[in-house]
Length: 163
Figure 1 (cartoon, helix red, strand yellow):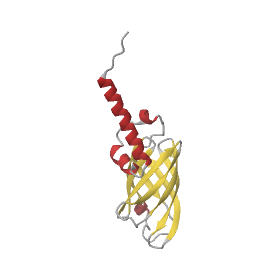
Figure 2 (cartoon, helix red, strand yellow; figure 1 turned 90 degrees about the vertical axis):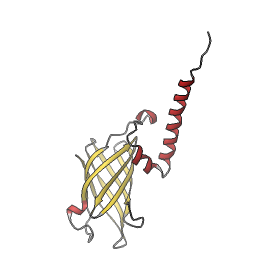
Figure 3 (cartoon, one colour; figure 1 turned 120 degrees about the vertical axis):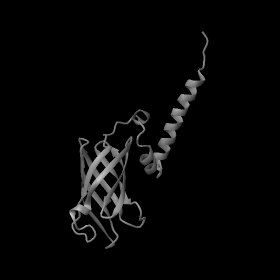
């Protein structure tokens, strides 16, 4: 009995393994936000053997604050958002007022935890969030962040409903 090597099989397996290793490396660094933003369409559940809830898709988000001169109407605190998902990592952009914000986080069972910030102003509004995923169609939780107009930390409820 002779052992034969198939170079195509070895090459394809090696490429797949190296791609998964590179992707995992990118996700572990701060480059993860770009990996999820641009590679969200890849089927990675089999690569990482994780089974997080699927929250990708179109959502309606609304957040609440007790007092704000900048975001004083309900319409300035709610918008549509497209959630992109790559394994346990998720990325979304949403609008509040005239600004665009980025949300990036990681799913751990039914918990979605991460950061949000102003897309175009590195010194602008930013903070973190903790949401509970309810059946993949609704998320509720809290946000916390800085107010660039009053120089204080504020917090409030945050709701996401899948369209």
